[in-house]
Length: 470
Image 1 (cartoon, rainbow, N blue to C red):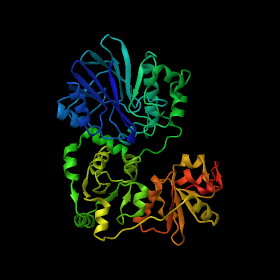
Image 2: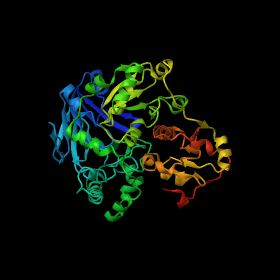
Image 3: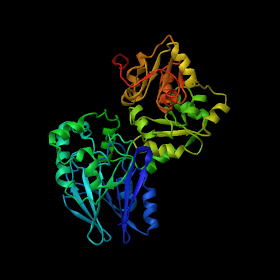
Image 4: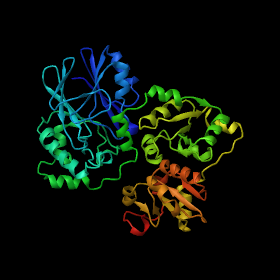
């Protein structure tokens, strides 16, 4: 059976392409749908169905654009209530893709409409399961997201549903089935996902903590809910977009993909509430940038950090990019629902500098310089996640996770210099740009972050000192 996984690493997302006898189906597509259309054209196939495993929280699906452009029917599992035309399938309902059969298996728990699709080949042999966020490799979907949309769906209720779905619907299936999940390591939709993106169901039964045969429902709920971090703020907003609909990506590109001269760019920035988002690499941004711009580099976890740090999904955005990467930035913003890019700086930052306009820089120091400054008791702030900090950190530093920085601006000293660092420099530069935009300039950033600090003789500990945590 021919199943193609189309994996997008920056948001740890897997879509799937299935084709048989000139008919094709796409499962859980991303916002930009042309690659799927091109893939089907290469096979001389017509996309017949767009199957959705659930209403996604961590990205905006491309189901509507794909249906509009190809005439494909959108399919959801039982209980789904989309605000647009779609097939809401029944449990065990079957769909044909050429000689292949797709069987609906309703698996509520991550969300109530969550559905697994059983893939059956032309001989009638069961091949694999496309599990969405019900079952990952090494993990299962977190059950606390739906309550941000429907308050009555508590995480305990959903966890109980997920236990039943796994035991009654998934685990009885054959061990040789291939598991095709919607996400891999790095996604915020689970907590222990493997870097592997497929596996056999039998191996998952042996190795996945959530599939232990002797696990009681109470044990499952306790283990599943322990250690869950707060979901990114944009998740419920993406869910609503996936349920209610959204502008076509073509409209978003037409609105945002327009080059602006430095004077026009500055005029729009000054006369609107548009945020200047600089997507260049941290080390490039540090050497010079437009004052008050925020740095979130395209070559990191761009979409995730945009969603974490820009609270308003309707925020108008002006882009500063490396020349030639403007369209990529607009598309990647749209994947998480930031659809209101209003233009980009034509000619990039170089055009801004060539006109002699005001710029700013972030002062940086090496890990060796940090060691010397640290011995002089210069206040230091580590913006990594708490789990990273707890695993190892420099003694006596303060941990303010990047996604909480706006809540703790008063913790940064006003009248003395301080130091910022993260794991490798990506997140600390986001933090630096935020502090600069808030009028805080009396700091330096450590080049290479904890990865380089760990190579020095700076005192470190793996034990958490509660007094250093916020």
